Length: 113
Image (cartoon, rainbow, N blue to C red):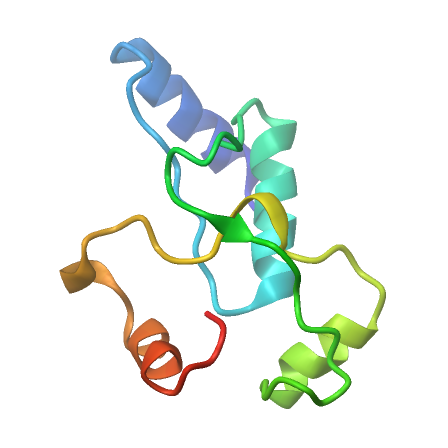
């Protein structure tokens, strides 16, 4: 992640009154985890109070009970930090019209997003 860009975005919001958020959204769990860590490292604060919606309680363990792409299965088995718990939203906080095709597909198949 480009921490200078993340820091610049935070400074931009701060100079305009501090009323803004950064939404990190990816269908690559490892990337999302790394981006959150980078954003927090430069001063972004994760919203953990539930005001943006419910958080992900548990992440699938990659051992076959829940279907997931092989890339995601390997990441789940790697022992790396997972995208679950406070601050990891179970669904997008954006309006329905703004969700990605991937989210729509997963939701229509009853799969975790």
